Image (cartoon, rainbow, N blue to C red; front, side):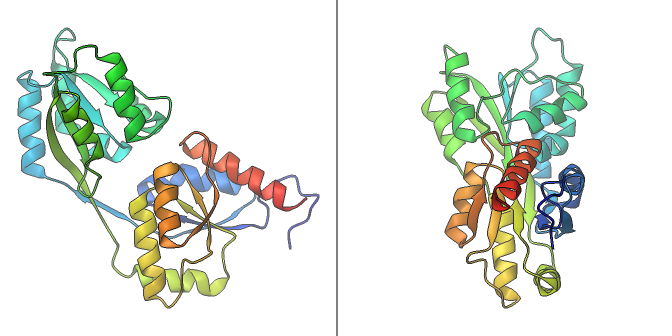
Length: 267
């Protein structure tokens, strides 16, 4: 049992991280640093998107077709390697400008050798659209390449088009439920009910909820920590009890919000 005098705010807490392995490392490390007992549960698998579409977009980028490239996730940056290679090779005077949905996406861009020209204060597609409309005084006729996962909402594309942009939407990657997830979820929950399940995307929440039901469990009432408002809304619809949501949609902010929740529950 967790001691109230522990110096680590998550000591003894069981936290399930339902994220793709390539992205779970920092989150798990930070949680363990605060004393949490972390269990990894891969609830999402990233697969290549529209390869012909991405190849065509890379050629069009090199030809100077686009005024803006919108990147809505770090996975989108990783999947757009050929497109971003084309951007790097261009004369800076004619490079398309880059919009990143949030700090993690902008940081992934930076590691790829490019800087985001637009990062909204709130890390959502709606905020991204609003920030772009404020920045671009003459949006009509702007040529925009929108890179999103295959199941992404069409709201951003519609908003850009309504503002007068010429939008080309390409599926940068696909998100699928890993095979055997239900069995893995059953093993994890059989050990003990977690104090929190960490959810970082609507797809992750949906896949985990389906896996839990397939394993004979229910997401109803299971405490969830969600990275942002879109994920939180999806999680609530699925029955999760959203207990933690940081003001800023980043991994460090999510971990700190969990730490505060852990401290508050001990009082």
